[in-house]
Length: 294
Image 1 (spheres, rainbow, N blue to C red):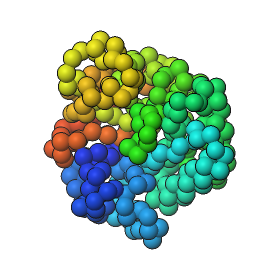
Image 2: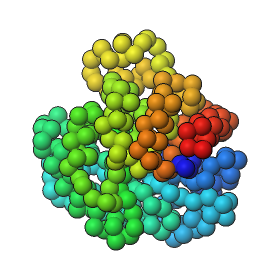
Image 3: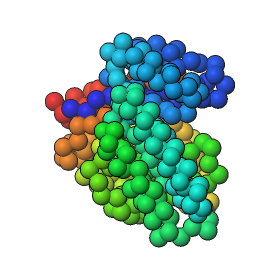
Image 4: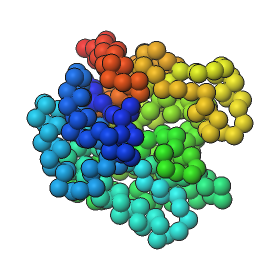
């Protein structure tokens, strides 16, 4: 049966930029949630000090939870080989971080969709970089998970593999037992595409999931698809919301995942309006998981 984890979506600025929340405060706040794990983020300010890594693991485990997943953002599509080598080195440090925290899954991405990059070249650069990291991940007992992502907060361009056709090309290019997909249904809407169509194309490779939901702040889905300028425009129309109240069809998602024998971690990346919203999202997912896996 899948297990639930939570991600501090509402507190990222506090934890990663201005330091107004400590990681220990987040762990304590998350103790009010009925989840088995906490998804970690490599960019928490306090993670710069490696001495904190085992301390935070102990604090989380003292609450009866684990840290199953690491969220990080390598940029593997840069044309400069030295830049990519530094990104591979960063990814290996994040693998170390995941291992020290007791986790099993560490995210990878393709990289930025730079205008001069062809699809063929971008897929090759990203695949080669991910493949370069895999022996180290295997040595540490970590599975690298490729997310159908939108855009890292600190990137100039959106995700290279944001569109499902490109994402599937990249997934197919990396065949390794320590590699799989982290499926995020909401990010598919940001690409103007159908999350169920994407899921059916990659469901046999999905090992983890981000549970989220989006709602339209204005207009219709048809307006969203017509908008010129790609993903940059979609984000203006779509907002994060409470899980079960937005666009995602969790019955269709869980039907497909269950049919493929999925029993991995589902991390909740919503709750942008605070802990009470996150608690309601947990309750919704608990009910749905019980419905499909019991």
